[in-house]
Image 1: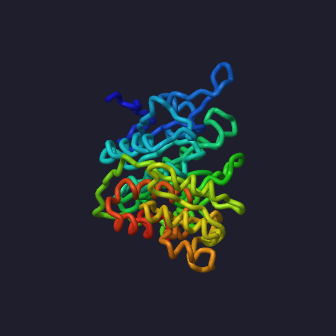
Image 2: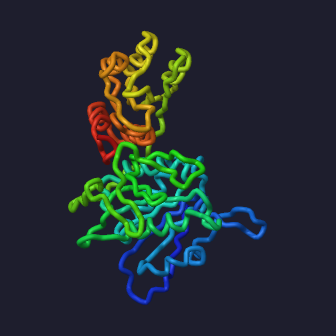
Image 3: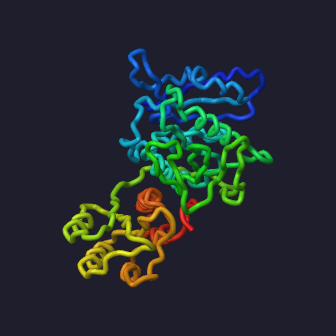
Length: 356
């Protein structure tokens, strides 16, 4: 099989032996773009990263870059790319102390959430980052995002990594990957985590929220769960949603899982046709998870009459999970939980800190 990436080793020009080894996985996205002679944006060669980010020379690190041969716009990302990222972590897990994934911002929360489920037993930092402006732009946020992500990934306390989970670092904030959402397209503060505390904040110093960080698991062993199935859908409820639309989604050939975005704390229409359509799908084996359209708060099925019917027919409460984490968790569950009992168990409990 043809290798899908090229490996580049960066000489940071430090005279000592490196304190830490970091691998950067470059998938594409705005961060890695520079202007060519015609002032058009093109991907830059990471072999020349020290020209763009000379402050990397201040790190006493071994830095390697695994750059995808075919760089991808994040709008084109699919589960095969998630497999590629997970495979790189798996292949180089013992050789590196931490991993940085450079990824486009549009679907970063989806990819980072998926990777959090796929890397079972992870005990090292895997930090996603990107940029709103290319690294070649004068006011780019790319340099700070990349430099701080590398610093966080290399930090240890008592010979153990401070961070041992999948995260997103963006605009001074370190967030749990499967708790983050992209909320801004033109400002630098692109990501928020409404339902879970910030893991770290980078100012003059990096202040870690140790109570929120996933604890290091001394006996954990990495198991990489690839081959994610895609037979899932998202149905966003809105006033006036039609029977034809709902039944059309639920009748998709091969559908195995559905994330339904409801109002407020999990409320949905109580019309008989709506509930019957969901019940029919559940009876056929389709897993349905209820998540809120609200940025903050959580689903509490049964709190109002408008969600009691969902609870009674077997719709699972997503609690305070994000849509991005819910749909990738659903993919993971239908792929790697082989019995209905196990699938149900996985859906209602937190697997990687994605819900309370």
